[in-house]
Image 1 (cartoon, rainbow, N blue to C red):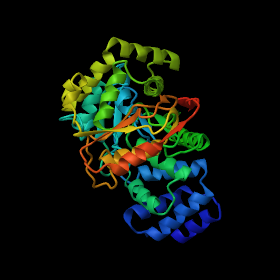
Image 2: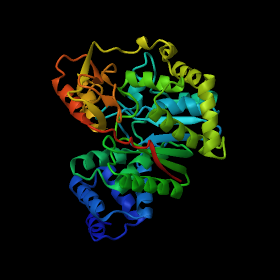
Image 3: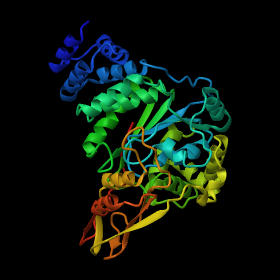
Image 4: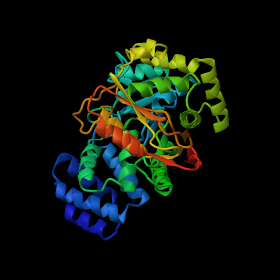
Length: 433
């Protein structure tokens, strides 16, 4: 079997066999297939696409390129969730204790962030003492005993994806639906969960900019899950503006706490409850979505949800007092107000620009080696649809840096102020089952 023939076959729009896909993934992971040939195949896939069976085979080939997590020692149906990423997305911090409060095992593997803000693991590390690196036994014991655990991903989990993603990043082949879908699903399959709920973001702050693209990605990933015997549901959610009011790390922890106390913003609460409700249905606790959501709302009202978050923090070595004493979390030295230059209504907020501004303040990483400042971030004081008078505060930048001119300019430019009030996008676009 030759790599040349595989490239030619895909360039001509033909379907690759399971053996050809495995040959490519194994060879590239081991280093016997050079970057230039892998790049050629990626570009052929970008233009010619892949069938459902090809995408499923690519996913499994990547899963088998490294270690997989064995969760069979965990009792019950294990559920996990994954977000395609956004600005102000702290939904995992909310749904883990929420779903675990219903007695459903939540075994969550998460990654670090690269770009706008930190990932879920980075956000949790802003809690003093919180351990995000658990041994396999600790992870399984926590889920069995407390119905929840969250840990950073194994260093050798899906190594093919790590290599391919780095190559896609420099060859303009990132935005290919089969390549995105197989990348995401390979990590979820390798993480060992029985059921997966996918939060597919769409809008200026998301990877998928159009609703049509988001639906296509969601459908592709659900098909992969189905073909690999994983119960999978995708929820297409809005990311045309930052989710909630906080963007960063420690300030997003604070906002997640507010949701679990029943005091969260409407958009964040609705998205979290929707994701958690489908996790509860897949986990077998309820037959339908409405009953699951009603139970989760009661869990918040009763205080069980916030108590479960305290327990999660405690069992992973963190200080649970942060739930009631947020001043324990890292605090920035400077708080810079970005004020409106004109009156009117907020017509749109470019979420990606807000994310970039937060990164410049220290809340995110330009490269994998960069250190995150947990105290840095942005508080959104105005959202889409809000009235804004000249001089009103649009957002507040939190940072320990003194030179913030570029971050301020980008944050201000992210706001589009118009003369009339616009309709706010719905938070949930649709469900793919």
